[in-house]
Amino acid sequence: MRDKATGPVEAIERAVQVLDSFSVEQPELGVAEVARQLGLKRSTAHRALVSLEVSGLLRQDPTTQKYALGPKVLLLAQVFQSHFSLPAVALPAMRALRDRCNETVALHVLEDGKRSCVMQVESRHDLRRIYQNLGASLPLHAGSPSKVLMAYMAEDEARALLEAEGLERYTPVTIADLEQYMGEMRDARRRGYAISLGEHSHGINSICAPIMDSRGMAVAAVNISGPQARLTESRMLEYLPLLRETTTSISRQLGFRTPGAGA
Image (cartoon, rainbow, N blue to C red; front, side, top):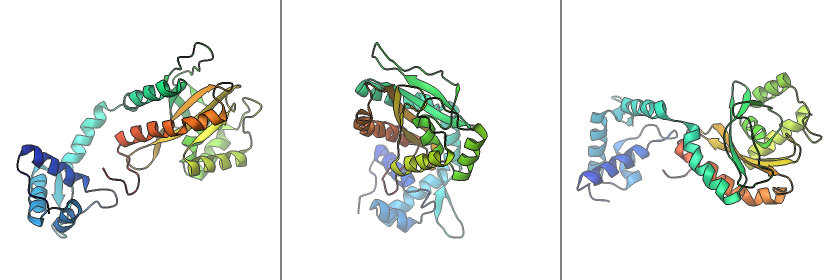
């Protein structure tokens, strides 16, 4: 068993460890459970839990005697959200990705049934750089970001949106068949990424992966795009680990944790 905290820094670290013990899967924990998870003496765990309860960061159920996150956590979350900006969080990771692949990197969201690009970091290539109109509505059935964002929706909702919008052809290879596109969406969810080979803009390829939030919901997507002559399918797959590293980093800042992963 670990010794109890011996100073203010150690006490803060212990408090953070205790708070990190709570999760969606384990929203309530008893003294013995916290002690076992953190390798603490039962008395040490109890003191930490009581201190956090007094501060409002935890609350104790009078019936079960177990602890759960308290109202102060919600207040702190509201303070965080008051100045939180997804583009601001994503920008450093997107710039790093652009620097490593030297292709345009963009952030896409789906709101009110519309897909839009809200931020992009342009390639440094002098020729054939990719530009997108920020905030403009983009099709739900063309381009790798659309496949990714639609893939994590309920299928009936995605189907209804696609039927309402219609599957217009933007290039000769745009997928204009609803069932074929639904299959592409399922593949994107299974793989965790999607590619587009000139489906939205002629001569432009892209690869995209989702950004997940603390609920495990896809709230945005990041894609790498470039001219087909330079950004071939094989080159995109070479960049896939870098793309996933980027989206994982952003997702973790939004509170996402993969199943079984530590804090």
